[in-house]
Image (cartoon, rainbow, N blue to C red; front, side, top):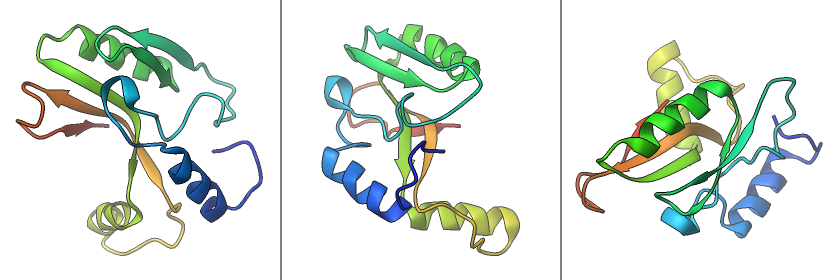
Length: 128
């Protein structure tokens, strides 16, 4: 979770204004960065040769997945910490829990969004 104590709505508005979770390739800005998350675990900032930018990875498992995706021939773009809309998060929760949870944060994020093949086709898919 974010380190500061600002409300999630205020923080989300600020991050949206900054362009977080938007763009692609070199211009993508992750929703969460290693600075935003307090952790006793390990996090990584690593340069991606396909995207030509620094990726923010929040665990060793994300790093391992990143390496696999970075070296896969069909991968054209990797977007880590990709934000999910609140509505999408609630639908996923409803399917899983069979009811909406009131404890769902205003914005969740997936670890990666992956683009394969020719840009725009096939559509991007998510890797948890």
